[in-house]
Image (cartoon, rainbow, N blue to C red):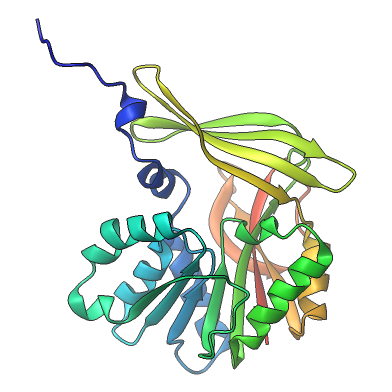
Length: 270
C-alpha cells in the first residue's frame, strides 16, 4: 500500500493551461486574421498588438508565422504575463522572442508605436460596461493603429446568451464548464465563471470569473463608428450542410441566423 498522499486532479492542474486548451485556438484565429488582412490590403501586416493578452498565446503564434511579424501583448495582470513568459514565450526561438514585447499595463495607454493590427479576443472588451467606457477604448485603439490598420474583435450572442445557465464540453482529459451565473436585464451586465471537472470527480470551481456587459452587435458597430472607424463589418460563421453546425469559415455578412448561441468576428477598419 502506497503511503504517498493522493492528490486530486483538480489540485494538480494549471488553470492557464486548461484555459488555453479549452478556449483558445490560436492557429485558426491567426489564419482568419491573415486571410482577412490579405484580402483587404495589398501590403503585408507586420506589427500585431494583442490587448488583454493574458498568456500571450496568440501573440506568440503571430511571431511564429513569419520572420517579418512583430507583436506586442498588453495585460494588467502581472501574474498571468509571467506565466505566459515562462510557458509560451520561452518556447519561441531566441530570434522570435526578440520580435515580441509583453507590457504589464493598461490598454488605454498610448504606446506611441502604431500597429497594423489590434486584437481584443475572447470577449475581453466586454469588461467595459458603459458606452462611454467602450467608446474610450475603441478610440484608443483607433489612435494606436496605422492609417490602413484593422481592429479584430469577437462577440457572442443568441437567445441563450442572456440566460442563467451552465454548459459543458468534453476536452481531452477534463470537462470545460461555462457558467452564466447572473444576468441583469436592466443594464445587460452579467457574472460568468469557467469551471473545470476531472475524471476523478474533482473540480476547479471559478477558475476564471468575469463581470461584464453583454454587448449586442448593433451597439458594438455603432460605437466603433463613433470612435472614428470608417467601417465595422461582421464576419459570420457558415453552416455545414451535413451536420448543420458551424463550418469554421467566416464571411462578411449583414444577415445572421437567430440561433440559440453564436460567436462571430468584427473587423473594424481605420
